[in-house]
Image (cartoon, rainbow, N blue to C red; front, top):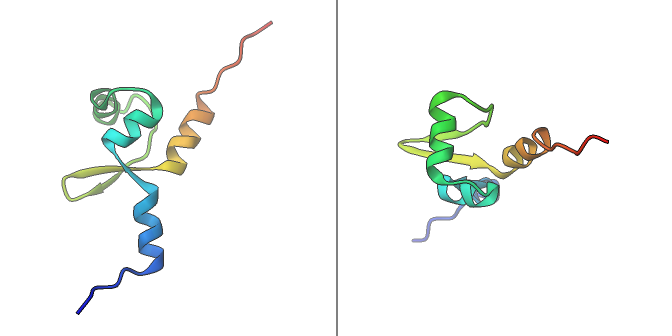
Length: 73
């Protein structure tokens, strides 16, 4: 007997990144993400699944867009 994964669930899982993956995506260390989460320094949403912390790629992209700065002339 095989266990099937609903299509929607597979999509959600592929969009959730581990702390390591999220840190690599943002170009920061895992420890930096952990500190941001504990101190609330940045409004970076995360998902708790048991003891695991996961990040949605869309939230990381939004975080990048919010923090995008251009040089002033």
